[in-house]
Amino acid sequence: MDFSEPDDWRQIRLEAEAFTAEHITEAMIADELSSGDGVNRPLMTAMGERGWIAPTWPEDEGRCRP
Image (cartoon, rainbow, N blue to C red; front, side, top):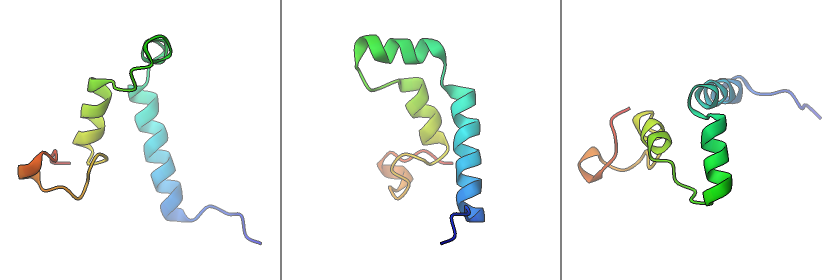
């Protein structure tokens, strides 16, 4: 059985790791743990700008341009 990571998966993982390192802070984690809110607007905006939220939605229906 081959457990190696396909190249396209590797690219996705590396991009997600870089995004996380840039955008997730200790303060953000602490706030989520204390509030349980589940929504951090700056994080959601950054994800939307990358096209990671509702990527199939048309821009005129709220999708951010990547």
